[in-house]
Image 1 (cartoon, rainbow, N blue to C red):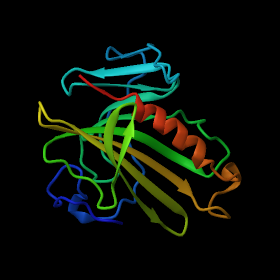
Image 2 (image 1 turned 30 degrees about the vertical axis):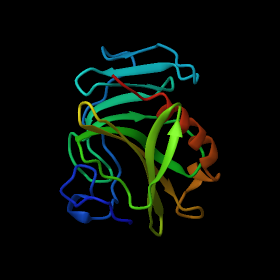
Image 3 (image 1 turned 180 degrees about the vertical axis):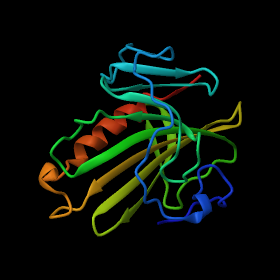
Length: 199
């Protein structure tokens, strides 16, 4: 796994600099109709919205996804890391996709990001986008982070896209015979990240 620019003590750094290898289990789940989520459509076509007044941001996500607050990061293993947006169980059913989420974390500046991060602009906002992955004999994990900041509040926002899948072949089993279309997921992720707003 690739290292971060900042030391391991930062919230986005690797916890104890270890390799992620566990399935994410959200600490608390709430439906998309919770007090902080609503069915306000975004210009991108995403049906649900979530506002976190304390952390000063809002984001849109697809219908059927759930919100998990105080979630553990599958990258750093940090508990209460942030709010996760999780696809339904039947998302990409029958493919090599096993689980995934978009996790929003907030930390104080300076911000940390992957050393291979590149600067990208989405819906007028600048992010540092970086990728990392781990591959095992049966499963693989992919992490893509989009990091931006609010200079006024000295706050860093990291939107981490986590995907866990099985290696094609006997490791997948009968329920995951088809190859997962990552291009379609990337398009959806770009919509979610593009809907992010700092308040």
